[in-house]
Length: 259
Ligand SMILES: [Zn+2]
Image (cartoon, rainbow, N blue to C red; front, side, top):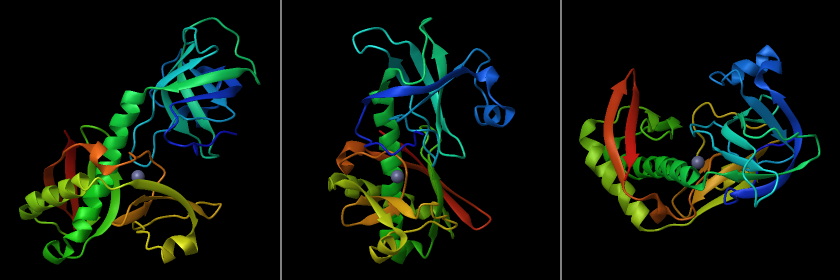
């Protein structure tokens, strides 16, 4: 069954239908994962997928599915969700009364502009974490907790206090790193190899069942376990703007945007 492991640079893929069913026919436990899906929505599963599901602080990809690349789309994917068994549900609207049977080839196309926008936010989040780490002598010791890379509400959170006076320095260092135009690489490593390579683990990190980690490495400056989509080079991010730093119960939150 499809898990999201595809090359993040792929924006079109031919795969095949596994299931196509109305949301209303799903078991309640699965429907609760799709909260917000309209009653007339359908769910398609495929043998493979390029749709990044909502998760890890990154919003879902959206896009279309086509029976024939030259023909109009037959399914609009309004969201993708990962089930506990790693299966990916593509939720959306059927646009044509075409039967979609198991085994039938289908062409997936993601909305590249939206994907790229999400990837810029996401990669910027890693850059801010690295900037904070590099500035530890002035900021003090903090450890990364979690992040959200949704446009308009993006933040990176740390345990420890980061004073508001560091805002300009964090933004400045982040944009310096962006301008160095460093390659952003993705590796698959086991836990031992990841630790040996200096991968930074966020507090409360849980190893995946198969023991293999997807690691994003901003060349030469920092690597993190991450399942999200990134840009190939840091300059592609654009300008990082640190909006504000807030502190609550020993946790500091750096909110940011990109220009
Ligand atoms: Zn990432």
